[in-house]
Amino acid sequence: MTTPKLDDHSPDGETITPYDETHLVTYLRLLDADAEGADWQEVARIVLNLDVSADPKRAKAIHASHLERARWIARSGYRDLLNRK
Image (tube, rainbow, N blue to C red; front, side):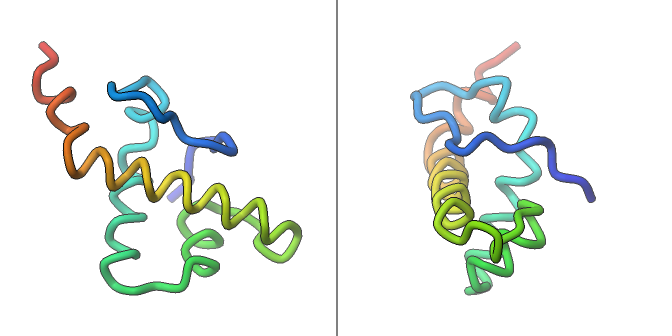
């Protein structure tokens, strides 16, 4: 599975963006990995296709940003998707 191109930071607004829609599967995979207690470096490598060894600080920030966005969507952002026609 190929991950769509990632920005260094996921969106942070209170509505679902086109970027979010493109990355919904990635967000679900991040949530699954988090629930399993997977190591962030392994998740960054496998799910986000990042070279963690090349820039671990950047990889960790990208992982954290996208995981937080995934959590927001799971908590409340999904309502925005459901209300669309």
